[in-house]
Every structure is written in structure tokens, then in C-alpha cells.
Length: 117
Image 1 (cartoon, rainbow, N blue to C red):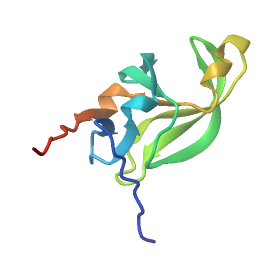
Image 2: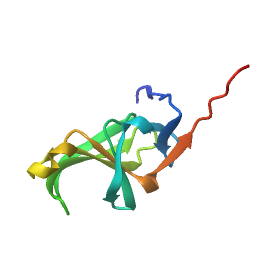
Image 3: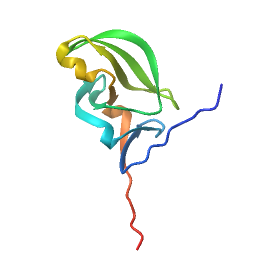
């Protein structure tokens, strides 16, 4: 197997994999906290890092039919959510190209900025 290249995100607030602490997303990439996944609450992000896409599949959610791929942490291979490839309902098109990360499968980390005097 080849060398693993991880992206390290920099920001005051970031979200990491709950299993291995690999960086997944920055707070400014968070769109909504009003989603639900297999494990409970889930967050919609415009962009994530350090994930691999699973196979494309069609799933029926409460909001209609979508083409999605599960997303996996590139370090520990844990399923952390899914990627919206296509939404078939016109009202759900805003999800296309976005990522869901389940709250139970990630941690929120706050970095304190120290001021040097």
C-alpha cells in the first residue's frame, strides 16, 4: 500500500473523525446542523477533507430520492456520512455536491489563539 497523504486544516473550529482525529472540515464550511443520519443528528458541509467516496447508490430519504456515496475517513476507514451526488426533487437540488457528516461520528475541536504581547 502507498503512503497516506492527509490534509491538515487550519482554523479556530474544526471537525475531526471521532475514531482517529483526522481533520474532516472547518466550521466555516458548515451549512446546516438540521439533518439526521443513521446515528442521529448530522451536519451538512459544503466541503470536507480526508475522505474517500464509496460506490454510488440510490437512496430514498424523507426528502425524496437521491444519488449518494458513503464517505469514509481515509485514515481509519470509518464511515462518517455521505456525499450528495444528485437530488431528483427540485426543492432538494441545493444538496448536490454537499456532504453530510454524522455528529456521533465526528468531534468538534476548538483551537485557542494565543496573543503574544
